[in-house]
Image (cartoon, rainbow, N blue to C red):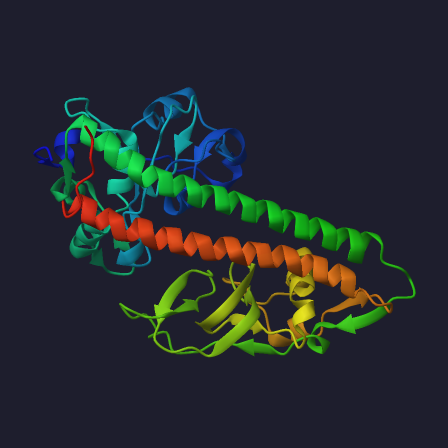
Length: 374
């Protein structure tokens, strides 16, 4: 194992803030690396789907090049602060968001972008960010705080070996996630074809509460524990951990305020207030109801109340009506559920691979595991 030199981040990177524009400037123009792109990805997406109307000057000052590290500089909690994303290529004319700090390599220290991508997501770095963040109404990360953070730098050959080891697991996870996305799209397509496009005038009109009770989650937000066993879903559908659980089985979760969204989960979990838990009365309807909620979500949430943050009432969900075939559609319901079973199998594999990656990563960066690079 080579000797690892440790540097303060300001010795290795130049810091810059991102682009802030009015809402009317988004949706057209040039590529834009959004806050969610940074928050949810180890590495910048190959294609940037968000667009912003940026000028040449803005594209120059907020550019994205291979090796750039992006850190979320503001968040509701310190656990979410400093989430990283690394660019593996240049993005011509693209810019990045103003709630993010860009760390651009000075060029004086050789660091592989792949190595940086895994280090900045490692428990070691995450703990250092959480340890120094200050919480008022929001957590924040400024240049002086960034300057005090550190990065260990092994030889370039060892960086390559570490990157290849972790990237092998990372790519397997990404492949399974792409398969899940494909299967969900197929399920949605089949639902639309069979239960929307082929709907007939003689179908019965049903209410959602005929298929499941609508249950709200807990009011108490003191749910997070360091070693909790079960997911705890919030309205953002972010999963924390808890020691106890209220629900068990195949459920559909509907975020009841803010950005309404639908999630399907199988297993033991708990949920926070304003997260509605929908447990189908019969297992055969799980897939059908999941895609129904997704397809008709805009209709269901159309009457959402609230001046600042929109929210759903239970009645808006239970009273929603839709056509349902009189004839036996069990074969089609089974086919949709079989897609969900494949998704569940992929989710299980992702959980195991993620645990493996997350167990190996801290040991590598704490030099408890030696990765052969010769």
